[in-house]
Each structure stands twice: as structure tokens, then as C-alpha cells.
Image 1 (cartoon, one colour):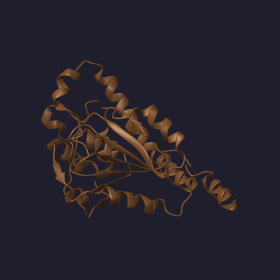
Image 2 (tube, one colour):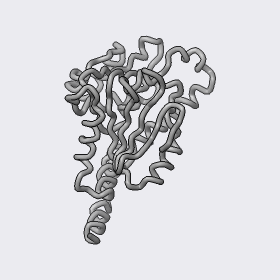
Image 3 (cartoon, rainbow, N blue to C red):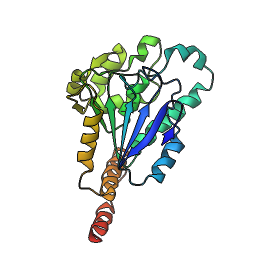
Length: 239
């Protein structure tokens, strides 16, 4: 188990679970909710992991930054802290494993930015999602604006960000912000089942090849799947 002041990371067989844990609303008192290098080191030490689920302890995923700290943050290494958080989310986004956010309750601001770095988002019926930073005189600072645009398109992303909208999980599903709606109040178990279905019957070589190819294709790399078939075939031939 890996613990920080804002989160806890542990493995359940071949699934890693990263839990944001900071008070009832799981506020991000620091933008970087887990040290990036420690996360990568832990994953290296747990090579059996084929998926990562990010969730929040208790009723909420995360209400994002503690707005009471906005004034203190100004000029106190804020740019460096935000860049560390942005690099962390870029790292999560590029992991060659399945990533899913299990969203219960509030998922706002930096919380939604974290969820957007995952490939999939499973939400409970009572979940609410939004980027309300505009209401506090700022804008999303951890890459959430561009990720929302890539996911929803220009018009929907602009409307949601400019209005600071906080929408329910059903509307989020209709927009394409949420992958799947849970039938239960707590969506964690359904997220685990969702991830297990994607992992089932596939080797880690296959998982890594598929996700790495999609990641490289998104970056505009030419011929991103080159060599992947051969690697998977070589492994399958050994069985």
C-alpha cells in the first residue's frame, strides 16, 4: 500500500485502486494528489496490474480545490504545483493499462479534471459533475478544459465551462461525459465489474498493445501499432 496526505493506493489482484481521501468532500488541498514518481514506481513494483480505478473515500469523488486556499496559493509556487499536477494527469492519461473513475457524489473542479484523465467514467445516480471554477474568478488549471473539449466537442465544452454548470450523472451520460451509469448508490463495485470484463481473457501484452496504440495514435504518431501484433503472437505461441 502507498499512502500520501491526500490519497491511498493499493492493489486488489490485478486492479489498482487509488482513493482520494481528504475530509468529507475529499478536497484537493494540493493539486498533485499523489506523487507522480511514486505512482510510477509502485506500478513498476506491481507488474500484474492491468487496470487502475480512481475513486473518492466516502460519499464524494472530490469537490476539487479548497477555495479557501486560493489567496494563499497565489505566488506561493502555484505554477510549479499546477504543472506537477498537470504532469501527473498526463501520466495517468498515458498509462498503458485500463483506467476508470468511480464517481460517487460531487465530482467538481480538480476532481472532474482527475476523472477526465481516465479512459472511462462510471457514475452513481446521485453523482454531479462540473467545472465551476468560473464562479470563483479563475478557470480550470489541471488540463480539464482541453480534455472536456476533446471528449464533448467545442460547443458543449464551452457552454459547460463558461456557465460553470454542475450536471447530474444522467445528463452527463447523455452528453458523453460519463461512460456508464451505476444502478447502485455506490458505483465502486460496478466499476470493478466493468474493468474486470475488459480485462477478462486478455494478456497484459494485449492490454498494453491496444492502449499504447490508441495513446500514440491520439498524439499523431505514424503507424502506432507497428510490432504490436508480432509481440502478442509471440507470447500466445508460448502458451
